[in-house]
Image: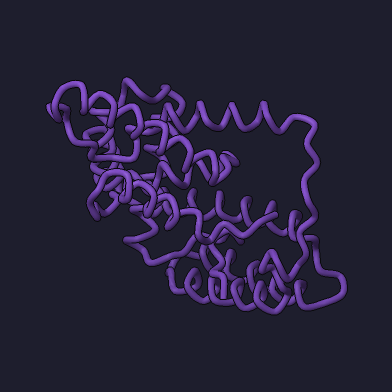
Amino acid sequence: MLNYFNYFTEIETRFQQRRGTLLLLSTLDWALIEMWREAGVPLEAVLQGIDDAFDKYDQRSQKTAGRVRKVNGLAWCAQAVMAATEDMRDAAVGAAKPAVSEEESGFQPQRIAAYLRQNAAAVASQPDDAFLSLAERLRALADEVETELAPSTEDLELTLTALEERMFAALMLSATEEEVVALRAQAARELAPYRGKMSAVQLKQVTEQFVHKRLMEARGVPRLSLFYMSVE
């Protein structure tokens, strides 16, 4: 399992380069990136999709003497990213994956344990008992990682995914109805220009990611997945 800490920043950088300006990605754009990452979309496929989408945009712009609407969101590249993903998966059928060492992956036990304890402290700052329970579990996992009986990285990631789902549920329960409705309405407004480029499933997933991200930002709680562990 590769560490995709740079997954988000590399996508943002490529989008900005192709657009030609340092437009900051919106919360909705980051939610879309998170959806791609969680769906296992390779970074190379996202970057290729962005390039393909902008190549077509540049061709249209040249034919119309620049009279085309400026690209203002990453969702505009969604279809091209999915197409690039399918192309790469077709090409990879039967191809062997090279082995990645622990040092190369960045998943050393000491770093993982420190990461888990850091997240435990942030989660424990929430007053709800559900968050305190999550913090205790994260500390226990940190202790396990430092022992010879430590779970594999893959098993640990599965556990963290389950804990994240519990955290998202706790965030939704702690939020007011008005807060959730307002966030979903905001997501709908920002997604409106891209509805023709995304499937109903994608729209729903991005909306939920958007709501979760905004609630986490408001409460000051982190993502738990090892994919968010920084590379040092």
